[in-house]
Image 1 (cartoon, rainbow, N blue to C red):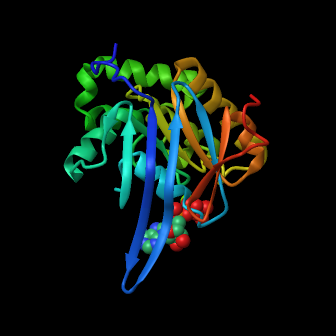
Image 2: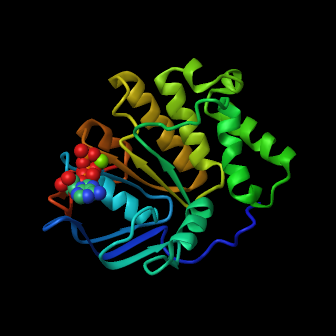
Image 3: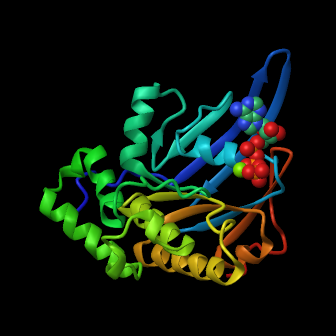
Length: 242
Ligand SMILES: Nc1ncnc2c1ncn2[C@@H]1O[C@H](COP(=O)(O)OP(=O)(O)OP(=O)(O)O)[C@@H](O)[C@H]1O
Ligand SMILES: [Mg+2]
């Protein structure tokens, strides 16, 4: 149904990615020679302490930030040298984002927050009617059918996070990037949201990278990768145990 033919290649391939922030005379190496491949449908947890480079790495993977060195290939598209304009287009069509601070549009209803994606991306070849239909279906699946007309301020934290997940899935991306999706939620709701993310990714065969600093959340992933001071390493304990 997607108007974009599926490009070949893994959903995400980072090769020796390095990111240096410069402010004045000082330099901060936020990510250092990070190499990571996320396979089709794979859910990877990215675990690390505050300041370890998680958001920086996720932002580079999603084309929100460019790397200082290394290559970034998403679904077979090499985005390393793309211009800001090309990256904007890439983000609209190829990846989904869910941020910690949900950032829904406050004056739009739950349904309209999903439809805004369709409008931004020129509706991805969808008619207005199909876009509405898709928004309704997604909200139903996420257990929010009865909340479609509510503004974000009229939703609970967990419900808002579910709207954000629906918005990230709207364009059927091959890769969804989650930055601490549960950190603003209490443990029980956080686990429900993780379960929902896991189910949604599995049923669609969508790959995901989920940033967290909570080890309890890593059992929802196929694999855990640790990051400390910008350096990645596979987690030997969590690896390979679904
Ligand atoms: N725009 C920036 N300019 C300069 N330094 C930055 C910038 N953004 C992040 N940093 C620094 O880069 C390092 C990594 O930051 P990043 O936000 O990626 O960490 P994080 O792992 O996401 O942390 P948290 O868990 O607190 O969200 C930190 O030392 C941070 O201070
Ligand atoms: Mg962060």
